[in-house]
Length: 154
Image (tube, rainbow, N blue to C red; front, side):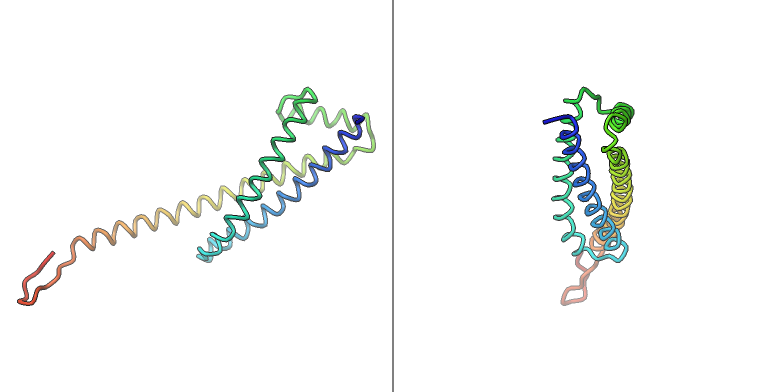
């Protein structure tokens, strides 16, 4: 397989990975809405789709990293950017690859921000629930019951 064919396959993988990221972002936005609206059952439903897409993204990441290492690159942004610039100069037909790479990085950043924001909402709700549970448990310890002769039982 020639270099341009390898790069074309790499480009196709980037496009597929971008599509998965877009689906992942849609799920994160649905999760965000469900958290805001308090629809816990919807969050449970989204979790399985979210997990499946994360597994796919991890696999794409591993495959991409393996490919880049085989190209003699370090997995640093500058190294990859330089390689992509060099490729687009050598093969004008591959001019879209750098655009796709930057789009992928932007999608990853959006997903990271949404996931972080959702995590903060979940954490806040968890803390609220823990405080409420502690207050109820404390209140339950101070409840008095009355026996048949009017005496209190704790």
